[in-house]
Image 1 (spheres, rainbow, N blue to C red):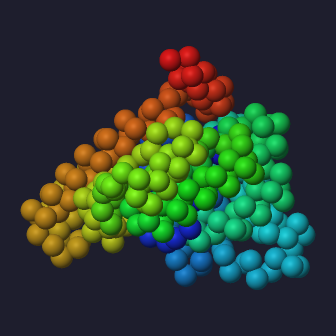
Image 2 (cartoon, rainbow, N blue to C red):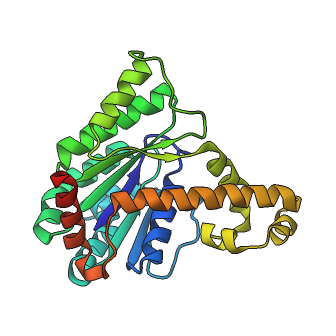
Image 3 (cartoon, rainbow, N blue to C red):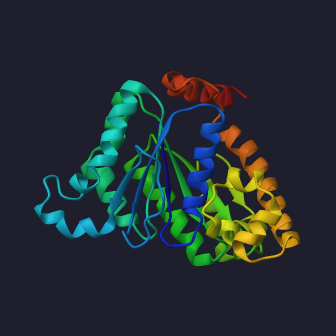
Length: 275
């Protein structure tokens, strides 16, 4: 299975969602590998076996066999591997990479190839409540439907800037309704307090699960903050972790060994349609 996260802007919570999906898969014992496309200046820690693709390498696109598809070939090869071994490829695209992603999907004929290999795909499209961001998400959802119709599509609403409350029939309300209509499942929500708390705790370098298990006093010593603030941040993150896990369970309704994950995903989809 392929799960990708996309947006047309940076600081939208893509990496947060991708990491949360990874934690969810780890919790249920599903093998996964992450493919992260980002600048070498921003490169974060990855596990052994994960794939890092530097955006700076795009400067070599004209001299690379296959062009832009050749640049991301290490990530695409992971799709061949999971077709044989099972598991999930988590693909974290950089913000503002929509046009290049579209070109890669088209040139690699990815939709048809994944269908042929029996690999399901899910696209998570990020947005905040800023009207421009919602309109961008709408376009990404609609473009994905056009160039990769077999990909399931979900809008992820990040409340970091504010809640998604608009006057009925206003321009942002219509764009939000269109975005939800272009999705194949109901939207996910990343609450503001969780996003702020995650940002506060990020300098520790710990995963969300490690943060939840950590003593707030120890976190305070690491970050130079008081343990009460740290306890509140951990509580907010833990609550979001629990809620988001429940939401992901509805979108990824499988608890199966890696090799049967795609069959389980399809079966869950049929059950949803039947109800």
